[in-house]
Length: 600
Image (cartoon, rainbow, N blue to C red; front, side, top):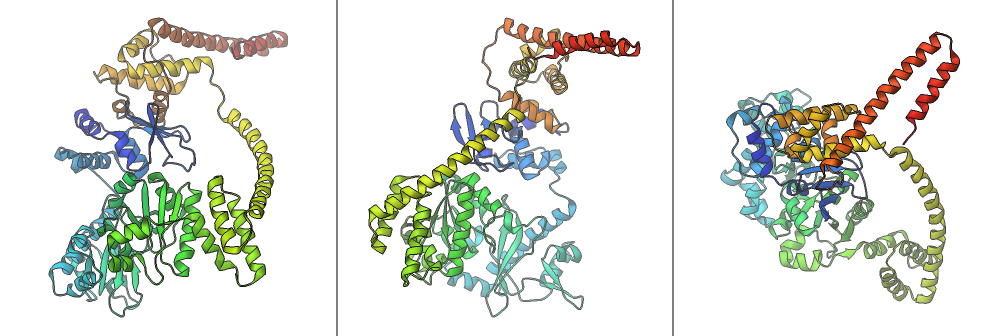
């Protein structure tokens, strides 16, 4: 993985990229004791089992077993090569790498690299046309009318595609790109008669960037009478709408800092909000929020404010998004604006400060939003529907654990529909008692099954196995202990993976390397072995260990080795007895083996 790069270069980059800070850009971490914990980004979970150790600069998930250092985290999560991660982390910490390192960097397959490069060229071209040419004046005037400032235009690299059918095609062909790869990427279109024309001509252009800030698609908006009004790049290996969020690359630090995100429906809403100093603003890419996007947001924040349009489509979308976000564990609030105004309209009419104060800060709780949203399914002018609505809301409120919150909204319900609080409280009590009885039954079954499952999945390790792990944990933190074990035991551990691990560790120390687990991992290419190192390193051990304790571990391992050798001899004797038709002797030997294999 890293043999072609000097350890000094790797160590310099690693030392200048604190693992908690790097992983903290992807996972919401909270300190508990010595370690930081968060929801694992490698598998879906609701209870944090993902741990980061700042002292040792490693991570480990106790749920799925993933583990490693800051390099392997980005390689696993983003699918990068080691060279890509090295370059990215070097740029992040303003470290200049040797030329031979950057030359070796291979980001993606050549076809994808070409597509990335084509998007980058086009983003620059469209932006230049918008800002500095007559052809782009129409687009620039449009942005100005929408209140978008030049600073924002430059930051988001907004542009304009001229209304010339072959402009983009000819430009990219001159840059060496082939028509077929441009058609596949959706940058140009092939007509029925075989002609290849520009896809976005006559539109303002909004680059859609990945989390690294690289343009991978475009959103085009017509400023004349063109149809459709909005036109996005088609999906590809690099661009999947359901897995990305607009402006994520710029907003993620502010989201983490504020522990809150404002989610919009459209690009213009984000642009307006961003320049109004709402920097934790994101938008979906013309589709409903997906489970993947909801999980992504939960990794970064606890609170999501939905700022959707007030029309039926917008409110339906807010409800669907809120449901997914709540299932992912997010606290959801819903912003409310005057009718017939979207967020962009509001900011242009009332200003950014009013938007932050009267819309974002004044967002409704999900419960209040839901009480209003649910009314659409009932005709409240009809007595029967009013009763059904009240019962429906009481059933929902009964699921809320906070007594204060329940009673707060019950009072609102009581006031709106002239039903006494005593009646509503009695109804809540009945529903909660009924639900609790069902829950108790489910819990009894769940915990019975769970106990069996945990017993099956996580059996206690034999004493010798634990001894090997404990000894390796100390060897990883102290080369003196490793050399002592090497002298007395060598690689004669009983678990095969442990034999391989200590062999790597001896070689690592013999080269004069320090007892740093994170650096040691750079010398291991096997993913499973790296994960084993992370798992063992995360085990709780005493900082100080005596020579006697080390010797006890060694003796236990040796005893197990002798026992296994003795069992192997007995098994051979058993086979000989069976071959000599001596069943009594074979049975006696079998009993000896069974006795030796019993847990001590």
